[in-house]
Image 1 (tube, rainbow, N blue to C red):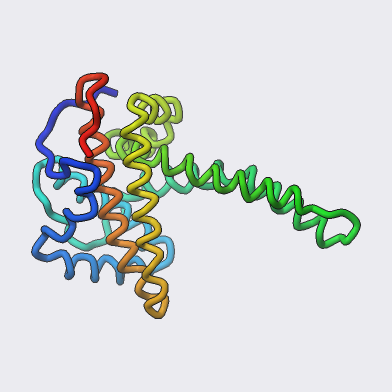
Image 2: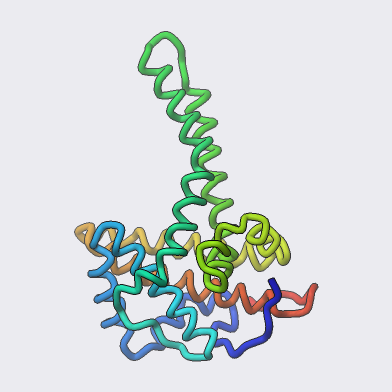
Length: 222
């Protein structure tokens, strides 16, 4: 997939953390989308649609979060692609951890080695998912669910500029940690910090796509 230069407002990967606050209505939008996120499954699909509409705004040069809402038709593709990648990548580690747990429960054989290996594979799967996530978002944005599930295309995009993939993936990883912090606020706060984390991930994906439009070998802006 070829990308072309376009107006963008996330000019550095670190700018992904700050751009949501430049929207005068950021509090209102994050609060309402956070309330929607409380709804099981539907809330996550709506959040994925909200991310892609925010991506529209960033590509058009507007530092605006999408209006809060139920953009299910827009979000189902990204949600589905993310879910399948998460399940497939985590499967080996989950299987080994399950085997280790079964051995331990039987008291006949220690399964700690399987459990430890499963944990390591689980960590590796998470890191790989974050490495691929910028490409998954961009491919899904342009081509829907089929784009996100184009494994070869996602991999080629992710490895086209390794530095950009690593940096954008790292920002998304940090955003995920920030999103989880909200659980300390009587648990419900995680829904609002989760929406902020989704906005940061969208900003990182926008920056990542812009890097793909630069000439080969050009250093990424940080």
